[in-house]
Length: 282
Image 1 (cartoon, rainbow, N blue to C red):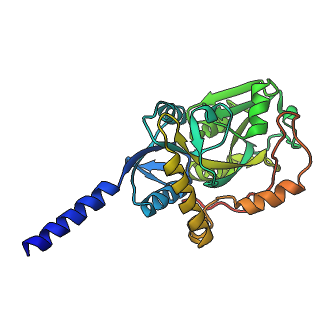
Image 2: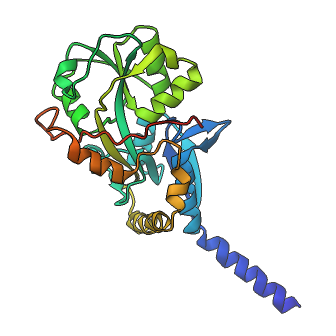
Image 3: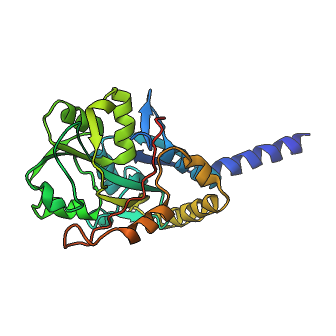
């Protein structure tokens, strides 16, 4: 009996030793990720937790302002951040997964009845004041238009909800946002009647989990990719995101082939119309 108890204790010790714990960071971006009483929830949060649990790891996921989340990933204070778009600047200090975590569609929002029209060319919006979130990427075409001065009047805030509040209160002309995030927040704010989504999206963009380069996380990155591919293959991924506003990447690829040429010349736009027809609030 004593020998049996010793073996059980040894097995528990080995199992515990193998279960690494990682601190991860995300930001308030419902329905993908959001905080409720200090606990992270959302589509992407559920996916990341599932993958890490299947790998035998525990995670502490913190919801932070996006600029702070990126800074902590750069310093190595957190092991990874999500959901992150790829940009050249971020790739200096982030090691992106190869597998797409969530496909997202970026749209423009105006006040109901606004005469602003978007033809697909960001040059047409040069005179508009556009609300953006600090340190947020909106995909290569919008980022390039902002960085090269095509879009001159950008009003920066700390989060998407504040952006939409500024739109409703007539402090900005437009807000650029992930489509489903904006629709979800407007529903929460009971402001869906006050805001309209412009007909054409800016573009569709892949978002990822990205690991710090402050330490070598390549082993965890590769393991994460393998497990994410596995849950996509067995249908778990589709069930997790069904009816919850994730843009299927296959739809994005088809839509991209149907869209006209670049909205601006450098870099090429990845414009697409692959958004779902509906968005259900969480």
